[in-house]
Length: 166
Image 1 (cartoon, rainbow, N blue to C red):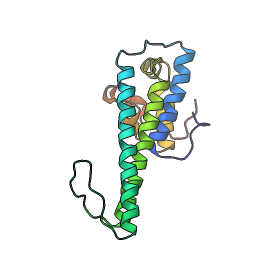
Image 2: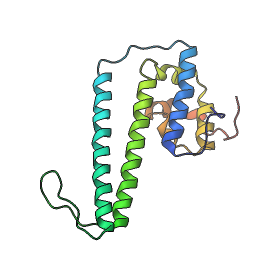
Image 3: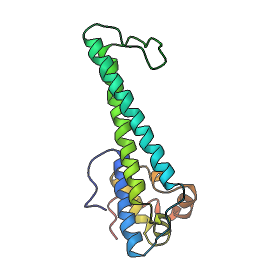
């Protein structure tokens, strides 16, 4: 867990934690069957990503037009879009790129973890002090790792020092 954790946003660090938890779950043979809705969820995520890529393409076209001083093209419904500054469009492009990256990361994580039961290893085999210390060390909110009932169950581990090593 410590070797893999690098600087990044909280979501990337949570994915790293889940991968480490996956290793524990594999060692402990915590397998589960793939849910019936898995393929439907994956196709929904793929559709959303495709939709966002289409929006991104439109935004890039609007940016080119805005830089030339032309008004944006009409949207799919034939309505006139708002005339935004190039800076505002660039900001929207950056936000859309971030959304696409997050969805792709979520999709990859969902695919990687489809046959592994992470909850069992997290509750029964991982020392919660390791998790709490890692969260403190890497500034990850503990709520991203433990749900409300686990926070109550592991209240005794919450005041561990960030330098804790098992």
